[in-house]
Amino acid sequence: MKRHQYLSRCHAEANQALETAMEARKRVVGRSVLKCQPIGSGSAAPSDRVTNVDLEKQVNTSDEWIAQRTGISNRHLLTGDGRLSSLGAQAATNALENAGMSGEDIDLVIVATSSPDDMFGDATSVANQIGAKKAVAFDLTAACSGFMFAMITAGQYLDTGFAKNAVVVGADALSRWVDWDDRNSCILFGDGAGAVVMKSVSEESQAGLLGFAMHSDGSKQEHLTLPYEGTLQTLNSGHQPTKGGYSPISMNGKEVYKFATTEVPKVIKEALENAGMVPEDIDHLLLHQANIRIMETVAKKLGLSMDQVIANIDEYGNTSAGSMPLALDEAVRSGRVKEGDVIAFAGFGAGLSWGASIVRWGQ
Image (cartoon, rainbow, N blue to C red; front, top):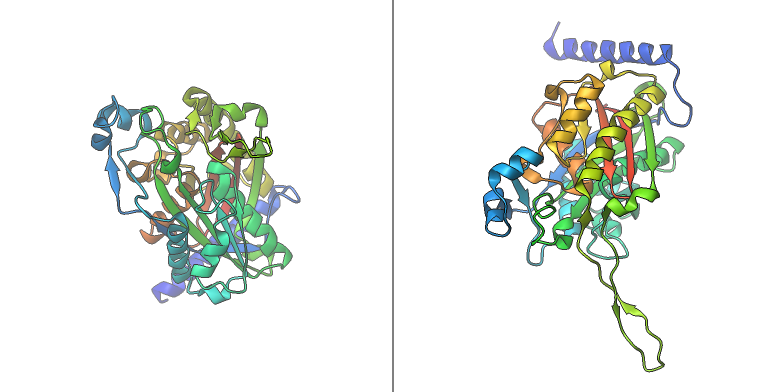
C-alpha cells in the first residue's frame, strides 16, 4: 500500500473512531456541531521587533523579570503609517493561498478587532484588499475572545447555508493604546494578525467545529478596559459635546489572572461536553496568548501536558484578537497541527468575556 493511501486510511479510521465516541456521549443541541471546516491559515506581523532589553530603556524592568512572569521576550509593533487593515489583509491572503482559494471564492469576511484603523470598521477594507468583491464584511469586537467568537459566528452562517466560504481575521494593534510609561502593561502587548478560511460542508460527519461555549460578565468589566475619554468642546450655541479620545489600557493583572485560571478550564470542559467529548480527545490546546503561567495552569487543570500547548507568546506577546490565529498558523505551517487533529481553542479577556471551541482541523 502506498504511503499516502495508508495515511488517508489512518485519517479516515481516526475520524470514524472520534465520531463513534462523540455519538456515544450526548451532544448539546445548538452548541455542538456546525457544518463547516477550517481549511487554511495565515498570519502577519509588523517587522519592527521590540525586545525586553529595549523596554529596559523605557521603564524600570528587566528582561529576566518580564520573561519569568509572562513568558514574553519580544513583541512586534506597527509604526509610522502602518495600517492594521493591511496587516489583516496580508494574513487573509496567506490563509487563502494555504486553502487553495482566492478572494472571489469568499462570501463572508469577519474581522475581530478592538483597534481598527477606521472606527466604523476594517472588514470592508480587508475584503476589498483580498478581492472578496461579493462578500458581506463586518467587524466583531470582543477583545481577546474576538477571534474565537468570530469563528463561531462564521460557523453559524456556514452551517445555515448563508455562505459557502468565509475568511475570519483576528487582528489588533493595541500598542496604539498602551501607556509606554506603565511597566505593568507596556511589557505585555504587541501587534499582529492571523486568519483562517472556513468552508461549509453538507454532512455532520465532515464538520470541523464540534462544540463551543461562550460567556460574558459585565460586572467585572472594570478589571480590563480601554475607556473613552473625550475632550469637552463648546459650540457657539452653548452646547458642549466632546471630541473623541481614549485613555490608555488599564488592567488589574491579579484579577484577570484569577479570572482566566478559574473560568477557562471550566469553559473548555463545557465546550467538550457540548461536543460529546472529554479532555483525552484533545490533540492540541490553543489559548489566547496572554501569559505562559495561565497556559500552564489551564493545561494542568485539564490533565494535559505542555507539549500539547500551542504557544508563541515568547516572540509576539499579547496580540489580543490576533494571538490565537497567529499561533495556529505557525503550528499548521510547521506541520505540528495535522489534518484531523482536534484543537481546543479558548479566548478570554476584556468584557469580561470568555469562551471555547473544539475544532477538528482540515478537510
